[in-house]
Image (cartoon, rainbow, N blue to C red):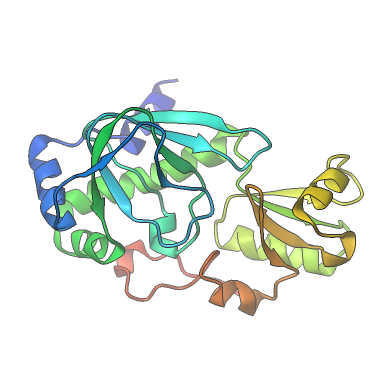
Length: 237
């Protein structure tokens, strides 16, 4: 229990006023005002920015399953994001304003500057990103990307192996063994002939993708040589 509490403290730190002000300067603009219910980002979004909450509350929601599930509420001094910012992966959760709030919105370019130039903030942010992904993996409840394919398909095995090597969070649904697959395929508007497919939330991202297709897809996994060397999660084809 103590270890889990420690991991949560690392994953969701509260920044000091000095740290918030410094990040605000990197944002290069006044705080952005959001109304309650407004989305900062959605699961599956590409190139979503990094947000620091100045006032109000933002709820993180898992929309990868059949029903949305609230994961955590972020308050003043907390920030969004995970290792997907480092690898170019799509957002694996949604961020929704739980109340009227103000946030600093920081671009990918500014985030790179922070990670490269400010060791103190870099340590806090990177440790939080890594701890959040660990919490997701260990929860046993988070679905992430869905890979739907046959246990007898080499392509299904290849897709699963590729995602596993690149540390992507995913759940495999077996054509032959999972009773929910037929309904899911119908909902996604695809057939068994299209499998294996990779889906996020209610969207099909790729159909029987080659490893090269993964590499060049901006919505999944891609190499980002402009990220700091110590942050890189290298792709393994």
